[in-house]
Length: 68
Figure 1 (cartoon, helix red, strand yellow):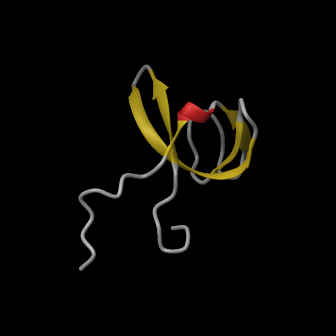
Figure 2 (tube, one colour):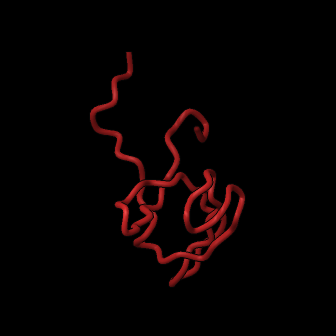
Figure 3 (cartoon, rainbow, N blue to C red):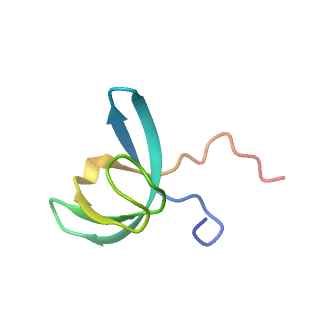
């Protein structure tokens, strides 16, 4: 959790399906975002840094979560 809020994520597609991997956004340019993986996945290990397209990073949805 990032200051009590859910982290952004990247959706990883493969022949076996897709899953979301939590990331930390480190830097932004007009065409690419630099992210650090927070979990192991097919595209890299935890802590690996990659450049991805901005439309690959999704903000967590705040709908449906209870504040109780």
